[in-house]
Length: 306
Length: 306
Image 1: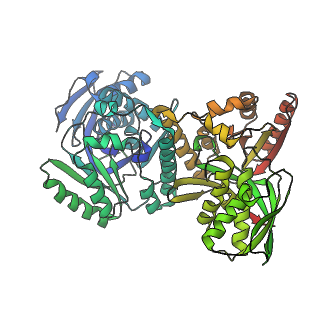
Image 2 (image 1 turned 180 degrees about the vertical axis):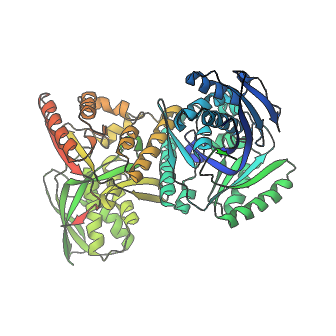
Image 3 (image 1 turned 90 degrees about the vertical axis):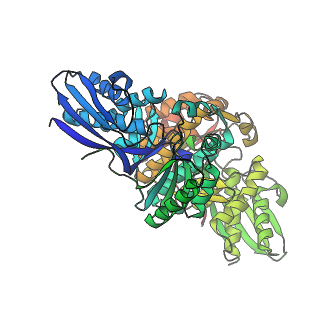
């Protein structure tokens, strides 16, 4: 095997009550990448379409992620990476994670799969470190594993795969304004009240239970974030109105995707999701802000070969 | 039905990472109570054995809990309550909760079960309010429901029943020193670092996953409390040594039960639990502190008629 073309999915991290530990993988939004062995004994980013991103390996999230893998492997194999971005950087749906996760997945496959999923996550996290100053795993883990991923621990890295209730759908609105992850992190207070923290972990625990029991109503009731959402939502135009609209249209829950500006509504079934997409489309058009809007199943597979 | 004799079980609340939201019910430790209708049209505590506790209805946790139930029911039925305490007050294994939960369970049964489990929990919480100044549910809920109970929300009250892996055993050490719940609460800081809170909710989420998958090792790794245990453990003689001993003897995890001074080791299987009980017995005897020591299965049923 000398070349692979892959789909690198978008992801929703910081899932409400699961701030910093819970993410999920999307099916209908993602980048394409082509990775092939070269004879030059070096790693290079040969082409990027769709976005203006650096080709220098050390400045590109896919480059640094793969370099971390190759350094660990001790290989002098060379690879060419082409990235066809469809996820916009700064969107909040894991643009950098898709590139990092996709690249390490493909290179690992071309090397005969010397590394397991957890190791790939840790390499891909190097891309996140470059992108945001923080080597977080809650985008790259679901991008690589599919479904819902829970990051229990960073030291050592331990990520759990959680069950996916069949009828879950995500409606994703991406207002085309840019919020840098780095900036979005800086507005969060580094201490929280014990009371809020207790509410948050009670809700997250209930959300996990709801995934195991496919209890959609419980899942919705548990999607409460009283720590980060109140602060970050002020950066997102019409957040409150969007949340109200979504819940009125039957969404189970609504929140900020990653560090925003994308937001998600989680729904049961196609009908609610498609109807909500139309309602949000109408509402946001009136506001004069450019945006992208997606409906997606939860992607159970993660990165895959095309 | 004019009279009921019941078993009112001990419980372990504040289960490590599940501080304030997660508790479980014990099988081999608990009080006995007898509740019977009387012709006086009033509620009275007629007898208490095993402990010196107030007989006045308004000063007794079982009294106030049942009174809350009767007020809601609008009944002028009278009841006599006898309490045979085997759980010591101030132990940290839900002494007040056993009395409150047992009493409301029995009276509800004698009235033809007008109230459901969630309503009974809210009545029993009035006993907790009297005992500790805080109407918490994480002892009375597992006492009434059995198994592991997760308190998602207080307003409205919502408690989830979680699955119980078959081989779980609890070793409970109760050093015979008294720590009042009220005092034990007062030493907890009311703000926490976001980082610790994130670790805590990652661990609790993993613990919930472990209950659903009967993953005993994950359950053990997840039993980490970096918020409350570091503060409260200083009130418990030889806490660190007991924890080290328990983990060396193969316990999955170790923590403070309720607000202490009782501590628990959670184990897989009888053999580990019984061996650990002997080791703790030997260790604590040398220290010259009186204590009680129990091994128990997780009680899946909760309060029951004898």
